[in-house]
Length: 52
Image (cartoon, rainbow, N blue to C red; front, side, top):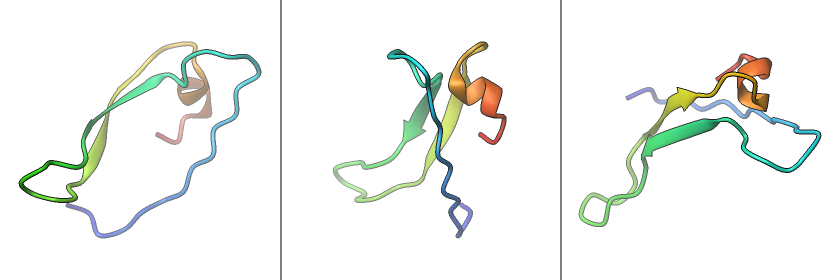
C-alpha cells in the first residue's frame, strides 16, 4: 500500500452522485485497511475533475 495521502475537494452544482465508488476500508477483524477508487462514472464531478 502507499504510505501517503492526498486531499481532493470535489464540488457539484446540483444534488446527485459524486461519480465514484470505493472498495476496501475498515474490516472488523483487520481494523483499518486501505481503500481504493473502483469506478469513476462518465459525466460526474469526479470524472470532470480528473484527479481521482
